[in-house]
Amino acid sequence: MTMGIDIGSSFVKVAIYDLETGECRANSQAPESEMPIISIKPGWAEQSPEMWWTNTKDAIGQAINKIGTSATAIGAIGITYQMHGLVCIDKNGNALGNSIIWCDSRAVETGNQLARQLGKEYCHEHLLNFPGNFTASKLQWVMDHEPELFEKIHHVMLPGDYIGYRLTGEINTTIGGLSEGIFWDFQEDRVSEKLLRASGISEELLPNIVPTFGEQGRLMPAIASELGLTSGIPISYRAGDQPNNAFSLNVLNPGEVAATAGTSGVVYGVTDRLISDPLSRINTFAHVNHTQKTPRYGVLLCINGTGILNAWLRKNVANGADYSRMNEDAAKTPAGSEGLMILPFGNGAERMLQNRETGCQIIGLNFNRHGQAHLYRAGLEGLAFAFRYGIEVMKDAGLNPVAIRAGNANMFLSPLFRQTLADVCNVTIDIYSANGSIGAALGAAVGTGFYAGIREASTKIKKVMVIEASSQRELMEEYYWRWKNHLISMLAEMEITIIN
Image (tube, rainbow, N blue to C red; front, side, top):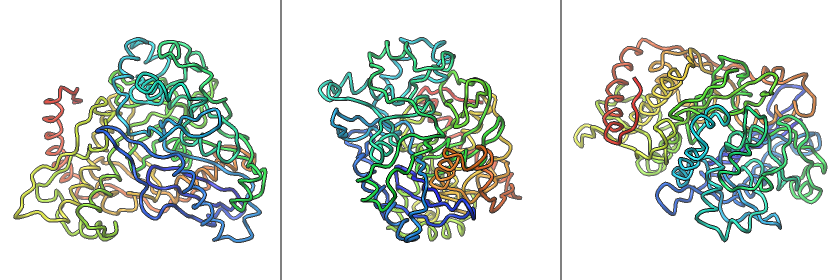
């Protein structure tokens, strides 16, 4: 058996996977309700690494309790995690305050200045991205604005690197991790010396590089005893949440596309070509199976405010009602929400809107017509429309998704959301019995050599349903254009480039 750990920004999830039977023996998550995101200033987003670690231990304990003494058969651990975060530790291995997480916008201008220093051509051809508000820019922001804290930094890590460190005592990362931080030079196949010189960051702050699949450290005896696991179990896989999701859905080769709709929403396509968007609306990173000889790049389109919009509606409009009840009420409301629309961009700077904070907008609210259910439906439709707009951005860059694979998790559990998405995008959506922690568990098995290769592992996930565009496709197309016209007006006012 293997264990997969998924460090999200809402929950930490753990799966224990039986390699012999191909079944998930246990699923767990912690805490009971979403982890808080700290925002002490507009555009800031932080979380405590210690909170992740506490919830990791809790989720592991819950999963082990479900399988009892069988836990001794767990032979490897895989980790997946929220991407682009910055964790700083001192020489004693202690986290220096909170992590600046993926949706934090404070370093946007720092990244823009760094891009000007590096030059547009270098960013496109070597980094495949502008530095934006990615990890390298966040680190330079700390250096510029919190010099006393910066002086104490011994190493910097991504969230998954930090949990790996707490389990093994080893400080390391992967090429995929360095690429998502915009530290990796794809032309030179190494950490970008030019970026380090321009930013003033020392390479000594970066962790050692280990393979995505393969031994990355072993579980320390004291930690193993605390968790109820066997000492010396290898950590044999690590990947960001979106590459890991694609891996678990067997999205490994050019033309294959995956989607997720957790706290954020993502469309993730694989290509063997160096794709770089001049406006940095999409981003390109090393995929889990990328090598210099056989390149595989993950092209990522992100919508920051997806599940977090649903969570906001649940807390502030639904008075804490469960999501299934919200979906049932939304489904009883007419398509188009009787003219009510939501632009769901309220979770920090949106990359596909050129790293600008536009805020969320609720449009057409009529006090005499609209109630809670209209808001629920308008939220789900607005998110589906944002996915459609993002896919148009991807088409602009040369990718053309005609079918999408997604795990049966998060917002894809909503029949209304997945049908609306299929209709408005006019695509087939294949739903699989996958989630991030199961993907990490399968990755761990690959890393120990249990499977012959990456493809064999990812084919273990079963397809559970297929969603085709319905007879409402043309109607949803009409509603989409109404929604898009409001988006275009907002973007024009903010002088943000508009796609056709």
